Amino acid sequence: MEVAEAMALLLSPQGRLDPYPAYERLRAHGPVVEAWPGLHVATGYAVIDEVLRDPRYVVAYEPLPQTTVAGWAESPAVASIARSMLRANPPDHGRMRQIVAGAFTPRRVAALREVVTTQAAALVATMAERGRDGTTVDVLDGFAYPLPIGVICALLGVPEADRPAFREWTADLTTVLEPEVSEAELAVADRGATALRDYFRDLVEARRRAPADDLTTALVQAHDAEVGRLDAEELLANLVVLLVAGFETTTNLLGNGLVVLLGHPAHAAALRDDPDLAGAYVEELLRIDSPVQVTSRISGVPVAPGGVPVPTGGEVLLLLGAGNRDPARFVDPARFDPARPQNQPLSFGGGAHYCLGAALARLEARIAFPLLLRGLPDLALAGEPRRRTRLTLRGYATLPVTTGPRRRATGTDLRRAVVTAVAEQRRTVPAGERGTPPGAGPGTP
Image (cartoon, rainbow, N blue to C red; front, side, top):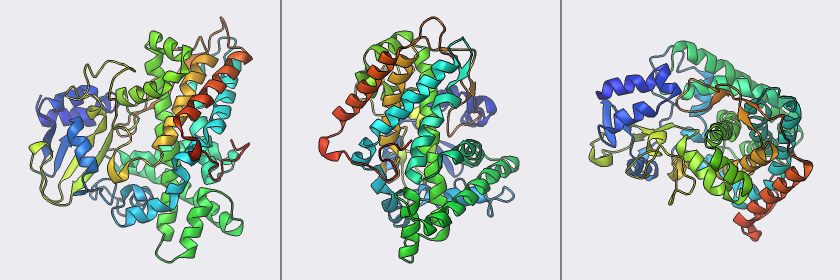
């Protein structure tokens, strides 16, 4: 298949639902290939890793160079991405990232483990109760969304009652992250962005009147205390991006990962019996079906990734999901193998823009999967899960399951799973790095 045909497949609705066949057709032309003038596509693990870490590449100021789409220049959705640290280059990137990085240190992330475990156990217990008579429940509604949204909202200081609306607003906004966006899709993204920006504008004013121990207050104070440290547009954009990045990736990791586990009963049983395996399992789940599939870089000077010349200003589309299945890096890459050695997926990016919340997402997943499998020992898919037609952020729209009427986990089972999850996290973090993060003290959801 020609490169143009492979790209057409990748960007089609079919390709967005299942990009892996298109990745392999692109890979057949080499680890880097010119898709069309001005755009190169990378499928090789080594090349993607190199580009992510090479300071000669920069991120695009706008999410995508789609200036021909009507309304692009004035788009609230574009502004919400473009003015954040997600799309900033030095020195602006470091200036913005430094303000929020303190909330994601190893010590502060580790301090969330018991909060996450308690919340996850409560959600599992609720799912077990709802499904006790064989009723179908949706894992996304009952677990994969409320767990990470509760954690990031606690960090941001968002009241619990306000959280349900974020799911729809964020789903709308993230449309703008796709490799191709139509005018209709941009209108949907703008609708979500406007709602989120209005919400955070109100929260910012509330924190000015009554500061709290949370990330929103930290950003407000950075904006107010020093001219030039964080302007008003950057303040709103970073709050929106922190919310979106704080749960969207983790929700997809939990949904994608659970489907993989339920499709491999022997592996699921092994993790259920030994939650200490969770670390290796999460890395392989990140690799086999990455919640983030695509990112991009712009060459600041002439470069040659993989030996292919790219001129100054050329865009390199980095297919993270393809790199995670590169046979030059992973033996039998389509096989789920939690014992895979040297498993370092590209799912959280790399270099200066490495995902700030990667450790938090891993923490949540390492706690969540053993609790789900132990607390719901008869968990099974109830019909075919429905994928979202998205390429960049890969996840499910619905994930119906039955929790099993035959036998249910006892309170002792759940308590044992909770204790094991907490102990696993304590073993992986040095004692000196434990602490309490802003907004995540005892009793915080």
